[in-house]
Amino acid sequence: MSENYEMRAIAPEVLKQLRITDDAGNPPRAVVDDEEGGSPMRCCLGRSRPYETIALVSYAPLRRWAQETGARPGPYDEVGPVFIHPDECDGWTGPGIAEGIPGERRVLRAYSAEGNILGGRLLNDGEPTIEEGLAELYADPRVAAVHVRAVEFGCFLAETRRV
Image (cartoon, rainbow, N blue to C red):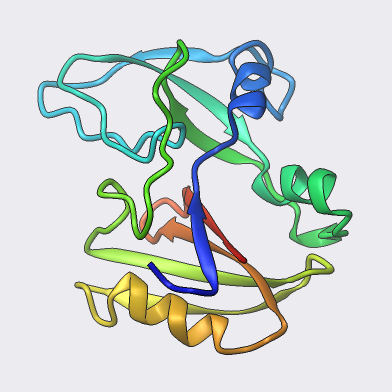
């Protein structure tokens, strides 16, 4: 784990809200994963099991961050699909990078404390690693948070914050 950031799953109190009404104003959509499972879960930063029933919800990570910190993401506020467990799970509290986050293609998006995008980093086939990409972005003292996203669908995977 880096000394200057921590990885975060969606907060338990936010998950309670999303399990009722998501950030687009809709109820969660129940989805049964396929025989391989492996959908990225944003509640515990793990992966779904084969044929597991999971919930698909719309989530606005910058909006939620802004509510907590006072940032003003303005045009960078976006809502996108994420998978969560339909019932409370153990969450994720571990140090370092959660097992369900690495993948072949990821993008890191860096944001200032005010909510402005500062840049990003493409991770392709593990080059650089997520840890290396995050270290590079957090070397800029203006970076307050970095989101990890899947390249193919642009889906939000996890948030990291400067500590």
